[in-house]
Image (cartoon, rainbow, N blue to C red):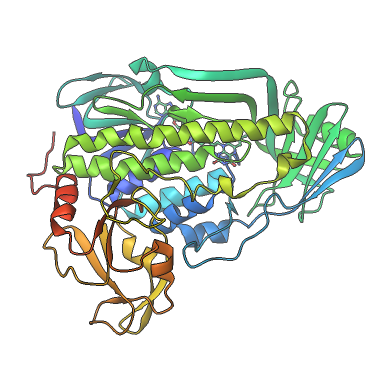
Length: 498
Ligand SMILES: Cc1cc2nc3c(=O)[nH]c(=O)nc-3n(C[C@H](O)[C@H](O)[C@H](O)COP(=O)(O)OP(=O)(O)OC[C@H]3O[C@@H](n4cnc5c(N)ncnc54)[C@H](O)[C@@H]3O)c2cc1C
């Protein structure tokens, strides 16, 4: 019998981020995928600002920046008339609290490639052609059975195995929602000539929609047609493009294609004992607004540190907070992408406009099981909110708060610097002061940290490993800090194996 601490079924973006999170915490894991080769399609090409922050923490942002672009304008024609032209969203300048305000576009296959490279840097590797068939749970283990009959024993199994999830089905977890068989599309990544790469084009003709969008960081275009009954050959796609646009477009090669159905479903539970589901296995939404992959990445970022902490001795109740925090987020994402799909169906002129509600920066866990707001007079930023960035200085050099939160540990921001050393291992403590402080103090020279955190006088902000405010307390409240944090930290327990 083979053994590991965590078995991840599925090596899409969700499984890969989870694997990176476990790997950088020294947790033993296997990540398997039934596909015999890596995914090669564009699919989720929009990476939203909150996900960019996650990717920055994982150390892959520079590579993603080099592999994509910030988006291009769109021109939309209706029966030959230009009816809409513009950018889906207007670029916003970086702000002290938001270093990455705009989405970035990278084809999904490239994002996965970059995540696999990061995983390799942590010593992990995807096992291709390895399919999870079934599993059995005991009190202490899950035993997975692979397609070749091999048995693999793990402390936890995570199904990151996509919308058709074997794991979710085996658990009998309902996947409620709807699949609209009447709204679908054929999507193909193609090499073509006859169109410029400086804008995307969409044509509506006789009720059919056809579009061609340059695929960021490649020489390809993604062609979409609402006729999903045609075969994705170069000649068939060329014929639809010429018919819709009237332009002399030539399609030379089809690299990848897929058909899509409007699907909106949410799993009724995210966990059953030692088995959890994440990403598309737990929620599928229409691609309008590009929320699916982003939500899966953040599921994994929420789950990774919790599984790692529990495996190293933290209170197992921590794992219950995963569904409590992430399922409401998925419900909101489904509503949002459904609204955008309705606009598209109605051919509404606003259908292509993308507002800040898509950037996922405002998602929060206020009122959730890990959010403890214990200040006498809380400010606008509360426990459960995303902890904002701010440019500061330390020992005369520039430092950003995000650099201090990055990595795998909890961070305490002690505004006012009166707490001193709380004597908690595994906790990074930073005094944030206004003027010249002691060596190592974070000096809020421009006041951006005080403004971003809404701090008038002194206060304590405890930031979780995934960048959200877990506990907020008044200055000096060491007892409050300890009673919140200690059960969630790795206990000095012996390493559990087998
Ligand atoms: C046309 C289209 C456009 C999209 N655009 C966007 C966008 O712009 N932005 C966005 O955020 N999202 C978008 N999405 C959604 C996005 O592609 C998905 O949400 C994302 O791929 C989900 O990632 P995942 O890792 O959860 O699952 P997947 O990417 O589906 O990966 C699951 C993996 O599990 C493997 N697997 C399945 N069963 C087993 C098994 N039994 N054993 C082992 N392995 C198994 C599969 O081979 C697969 O590799 C789009 C989707 C489509 C279809």
